[in-house]
Length: 240
Image (tube, rainbow, N blue to C red):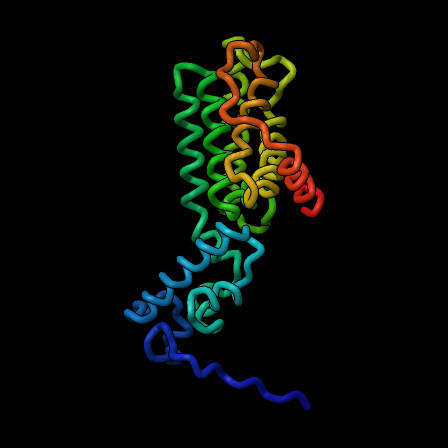
C-alpha cells in the first residue's frame, strides 16, 4: 500500500486555514498576511530575474531556490508556471501593444515600422522570457495569446503603411515580420555572452534588406566581429 503523503510543514501564507464554509465559498478570501505579501514579491522578483536570464525554461523549483523560499510557498501563490508567467508578462505584452499603436500613429510610416522592429528586438535582448513569449517558445497562456493575436493585424497595417509611402520593398509582407524576429532571436541568444549588442549590426543589415532604397538608410551602427569571435557565435547557433 502506498504511503500517505505528508502535509507541508511550511507556514500558511494566507492566515489560518479556511473552514468548510470558506472552502465552499471561494469569494470569501482572507487578505494576504504581511509575510505572504513579502514572499509573493520575492517569488515574482526571482521569476523575473531567472526568466530574463534563462528564458521560460526556469522551473518553479529554480524560482523557489532563487527566492529563498520553500517550493510549497511558490505553489501556494502560483499553482502552475503558466499563472506565474502570465502574471509577470501580461503587462509587458500590453506595453508592446502600446508601442505598436504609437508606431501606427507615427506620421512617418517607415520610421514607425523600423522603430517598432528595433524596440521589439531590444526588448528580447534584455529579457529572454519575453523573447520566448514573442517567438512562440511558450504556449498555453490564453490571455497573452490573445494579446499576441492583437499584434498581427496591427503588424499588417504597419506593413501596408510602409508600402504606401514607398519605403518598404513590395515583396515584403506582414508574415515576414515574426520570422525576421525569430531570426534575430537566434542571433541574440547565440551572441549574448560574446558581444551582447551584436544583433544591432545585423538588425541594421536586415532593415537595409527590406528597404526600397537601402542607400538612404544610415550606416551600420557597429563593426563586424573578427573571424575568431564570429566562429564562436556560429558554434553557439549550432548548439542551440
